[in-house]
Length: 586
Ligand SMILES: Cc1cc2nc3c(=O)[nH]c(=O)nc-3n(C[C@H](O)[C@H](O)[C@H](O)COP(=O)(O)OP(=O)(O)OC[C@H]3O[C@@H](n4cnc5c(N)ncnc54)[C@H](O)[C@@H]3O)c2cc1C
Ligand SMILES: *[C@@H]1O[C@H](CO)[C@@H](O)[C@H](O)[C@H]1NC(C)=O
Ligand SMILES: *[C@@H]1O[C@H](CO)[C@@H](O)[C@H](O)[C@H]1NC(C)=O
Ligand SMILES: *[C@@H]1O[C@H](CO)[C@@H](O)[C@H](O)[C@H]1NC(C)=O
Ligand SMILES: *[C@@H]1O[C@H](CO)[C@@H](O)[C@H](O)[C@H]1NC(C)=O
Ligand SMILES: *[C@@H]1O[C@H](CO)[C@@H](O)[C@H](O)[C@H]1NC(C)=O
Ligand SMILES: *[C@@H]1O[C@H](CO)[C@@H](O)[C@H](O)[C@H]1NC(C)=O
Ligand SMILES: *[C@@H]1O[C@H](CO)[C@@H](O)[C@H](O)[C@H]1NC(C)=O
Ligand SMILES: *[C@@H]1O[C@H](CO)[C@@H](O)[C@H](O)[C@H]1NC(C)=O
Image: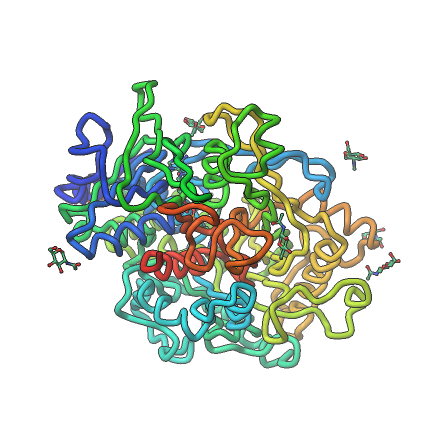
C-alpha cells in the first residue's frame, strides 16, 4: 500500500506523547487510566486533561492511525472492512440462528480511534425520543435530548464540504455546532443526476418519503442529505480530532499503543463496595504483563465487545457463569455482556442507465488513479466521501399486522424503525455496468444477543452473539424495509433511470425473501448495551446513570456498552455524546 510522503510528514511532534513501547512511558501511575482509545476513550482523555491537575493514561490495544491511508481517504473505508487486516480484531460471530446458522465476520477496529478510524463515517444522532427514553429508564433527566444537545455541540465541528458547494437547503444550521472538536460535513463530491432522482422522489411520494431538511434535528423521519464525520476531504476520527497535536501535547496526557488490558487488579471490598488498584496489560512484543495504577479512577472504554470481557475476567459478571469458568466472583452483576443489541442490515441493487455513478471509477484503473491523484493533490473529488447521497428514515405502518403480536419497540411516534441509505454505484463491485444500491437497516430490533467468555484466558477472543434476526419482528421489519425500498423506486422519476434490479426481491415469495434475508443479512456494526446503564435502584444493569459500575467505586464505563437502548441511528454520535457527558460525571 502506497503511503504518500506528505501524510507521514504530519507525524512530527504530534506523536511525541503517543508511546509505542511501555519502557518509554514516563510513569505507570496516573490519576485516571482509560482502557481503550476508541470513540469514547479519546473524548474522555481529552476532557479530563483540560484540567492540568489530572494525569491521564490511555491504554490502547491497537496500532497507530498515523499515515494509515485507508483510514484517511474516506472512499477507502472498504479496504479496512473487507477481511482480516492489521487494523482489525478479526472477530467472527457465533453461529447465528437468524442467519441460517452462518458465522459472519464482525469488524471491530484495532487502531487508535477505535471504530471511528474504520467506520462508514455516517453522522446520525437518532430521535429526541430515543434519548428521552434513556432519561426515562434511568430516572436521570440529564440523558434527555434537550439536556444532551450541548454535548452534541461540544462534539461536533460543522465544516464546509470539500468542494465548498452552496449548502443552503441541504441542512439546518440551527441544529449544528461549528465550535466542537470532531468534523462533520455534507458530501464534498456530487452526483447531480442521482441526487435529483432522490429529491424528485420526495416530491412524487411526499406521504411516505417527505423531504427532511435535517435528520439530525431530533426528528429524523423523511429523506435528508447525507452528513459524515469528514473534514477537508479526510476522515475525522476520535484520534485525529480529540488527540490532535494541540491536545496530545498536553503534559498530563499519555497514550500507550499495543497495550491490551486483560483485567482489573487489586480488588478490595470495603463495606460491600469494591475498588481496584489498577489494570493489567500485555504490551507489544514483551509477552509479559504490566500493571498501570489509577489513584482516582479506572475508566473502561474498550467498546461494546471489549469492555464486558475485561469486567468478566476481573470477576465482575454473572457469578455462576464466572465460577464455572474458574474465575472467582468479585461483584455479581448478571447483566454484564447481556442485552447486546445490534441492527441487522441487507442490501438491494439495481442496474441503471446513468453513467454518472461511482462504477466507472471502480472499474477503470485510469479513472481510479485520476481520482486518487485529485484527492492526494487537493483533498477534493469523489474520494472525499463514500458514494451515498441521502438517507431515508421511515416507520412501519401504524396498522402493520406485526403490532398485533409485538409492542412497538421504537421510542415513540417520531422515531423511525427503518433506515434506507441511498447510494450510487454497485455495492458488490460489479466488473461492468452502472448501478445504484440501497442499504436497509432495522433500527429498532427486538432481538438481543450476548458477549460471553469462552475460557478464563483473557487473551482468548470472546464469544460474540449479536443475536441478528432472531425475532419475528426483526425479520418482518427487514422484509418491510425491502418493500419500502422498492416502493421508493416506484416513483415515476425512476422509470427511465432504472434498468432492472440485480436480484428481483419483489417477485419472491415470503419464504424466498426470508431465505434471501437470512443468507445475506449482516451486522451494521452498531452493537450497544452490553454493559448497560440503568436506574440507580434497578434490579438489572451494570452502571448507574453517572456511569459508575454498580457496587464499585473508582470504576466507570464510558463507551457504547452503556447505551440502554440503541438509538434509531448509526451509533458513533450517540457514543460521542455519552463520552462528552460521561467524562464530566462521577
Ligand atoms: C464496521 C463498522 C462500521 C460502522 N459505521 C458507522 C457509521 O458509519 N456511523 C456511525 O455513527 N457509527 C458507525 N459504527 C459504529 C461506531 O463506530 C461505534 O458505535 C463506536 O465507535 C463505538 O465506540 P466505542 O468507544 O464504544 O468503541 P470503539 O470505537 O470500538 O473503541 C474501543 C477501543 O478499545 C480498544 N480495546 C478493546 N479492548 C481492549 C483491551 N482489552 N485493551 C485495550 N484496548 C482495548 C479497541 O481497540 C478500540 O480502539 C460502525 C461500526 C463498525 C464496526
Ligand atoms: C489545580 O490545583 C491547584 C492547586 O491545588 C488549584 O489551585 C487549582 O484550582 C486546580 N485547578 C483546577 C482546574 O482544578
Ligand atoms: C488480524 O489479521 C491480520 C491478518 O492476518 C493480522 O496481521 C493481525 O495481527 C490480526 N489482528 C489481531 C488483533 O490479531
Ligand atoms: C441451526 O442450528 C440449530 C441448532 O444446531 C438447528 O436446530 C437448526 O435446524 C439449524 N438451522 C438451519 C437452518 O440449519
Ligand atoms: C435487559 O434489558 C431489559 C430492559 O430493556 C431489562 O428488563 C432486563 O432485565 C435486562 N436483562 C439483563 C440480563 O440485564
Ligand atoms: C478508462 O478511462 C480512460 C479515461 O477516460 C479511457 O481512456 C479508457 O478507454 C477507459 N478504459 C476502459 C477499459 O474503458
Ligand atoms: C501523492 O502526492 C505525493 C507528493 O505530492 C506523491 O509523491 C505521490 O506519488 C502521490 N500519490 C498518488 C497516489 O497520487
Ligand atoms: C402473529 O402471531 C401469530 C401466532 O403466532 C402468527 O400466526 C402470525 O403470523 C403473527 N403475525 C405476524 C405479522 O408476524
Ligand atoms: C420471478 O421472476 C422470474 C423471472 O421473471 C421468474 O422466473 C420467477 O418464477 C419469478 N418468481 C416468482 C416467485 O414469481
